[in-house]
Length: 156
Image 1 (cartoon, rainbow, N blue to C red):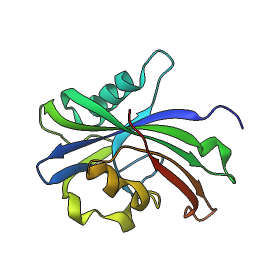
Image 2 (spheres, one colour):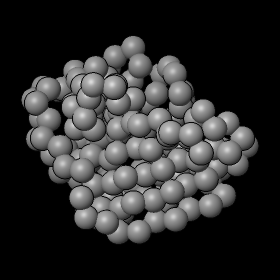
Image 3 (tube, one colour):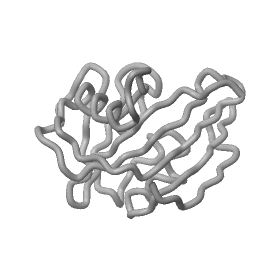
């Protein structure tokens, strides 16, 4: 297998709510998801997560905690396969605002719009939002449904 694309995703947490972004353009358009994107060649995972939060929501100075390392495999479209470093954030400066790519929305953690998210989210996002740290691999079918998943607890 070729080197997987390296990405980040971060979730801002405010009391019982999580900030999700409605994806307006690019990979995943029409889905709700965490805030993130590609790790550039000269960046660490943390630096990329901070940059992506700033670019997509305009928040600054996030205090991030790594809580996941997830691998997404798309056998029919290998260029989509990626490794994603997952972060939670409970402290930041500024108010999330809509950008060209993302419309941020505060969602009750107990009422996640899982049917409007990538299919894998149902397997790991509730656990991470409830304090678990996870490592996992998800394999997708042509219709973008998870056909195989492996998840385990991991400390970061």
